[in-house]
Length: 237
Image (tube, rainbow, N blue to C red; front, top):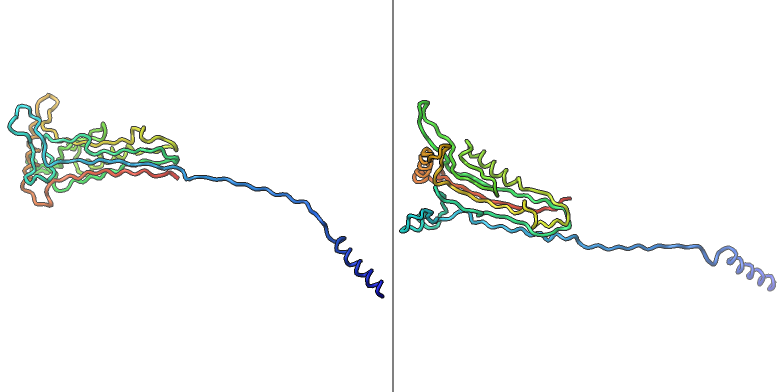
């Protein structure tokens, strides 16, 4: 019985080796990669010096008067016939982003109060929109006298500004793009000449009417202009 038990035990031990394996086929693989954040690094620069309370005289024959226009309180910004500011509102972009971008300009312009000219003729009394200012967007001049409503004049200015919007591919040096150097100027001509080369005195009458209106108008009727520029650079998805 002891011998039989020993043989049974040996059979059980060897059976575990027969029923299993000592090795098997196996394979494996390992992959890795890395990345960094794409560069943006775009900077926007803007300068605004639109209007002044004082303007120097341009008449070289006048020596005793240095300034032709001066605000009574030395602080209110003014516009008047013969005044102007060149490149007084500018915006530019720098940077070479590694992403595609869109550059968008938005002009904000309001003509508050009464910009108008009243007159009478055979048909009766009339009130026309009148704004003698010329707004220049880069090389595009928009004359207020070419428009019959303030909304049309404002739209012409804002459209001229937004026409400089553009889209750029990755790795574009934005500082080299001429569209991204926008400048706004303005002028109120001192004299306007007609096709015959003579001074148009009807313009003088309109300018005078506007100046008298400013002198006598209530605060809500005072003709005023506000002009601003908003610039954004946004990644394109």
